[in-house]
Image (tube, rainbow, N blue to C red; front, side):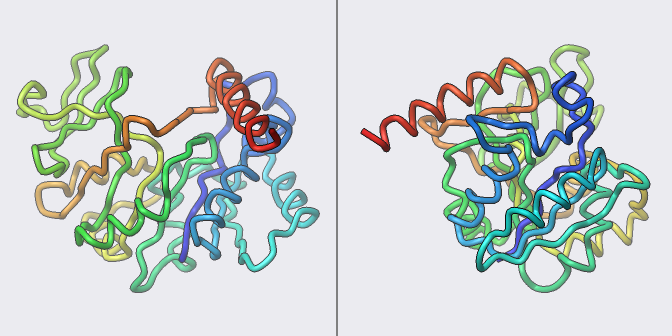
Length: 251
């Protein structure tokens, strides 16, 4: 199974840790966050991985040369010349991702114990073109879903912005996106038809097609642990969680 890891970000929220180091190689409980994500994907059955790079990308290439992962194919989508954001990053990697097989996308700065294999299988069972991991947690931006978890819109609670503008957020389930999703290659044709190219985010693309395509949310279980480790405070929380887990395994 294929998966793409978004590892091209600038890591501005983690400065000064990322001044001379790519965010993907910032250690979490003694291991780079990239290694945590790769191992999680491998354990879930994903053995064909594409990693995009930008900031200090050569360090990621060197790390992967020195730390091979057995029985796993790892390829690089090189964005060192221009950072393409999430949607543009997927489109650039299309030659490695296209075909009949949906692929999982995982932000490098997300750490969780969510069952990634089950998440992927649920996508296959629903027949959706894209499945987004979502949860009910406090944030400023929410995706809007109907009772069957079909995507309909987006809202920013802080600014009051709503997309599309005529939608009423109060009539929908408001759930936070978790930085993990499954993308079916059929969506590349929708990108072509609507002339998406260059640098763009994947969420506006999903919103632009959600009335004509099957874009669904899959809600995380309440007991699942999830951390955005791209921020100093949650990086520390994730480290404490991992250290506790490691201690229990050793005891």
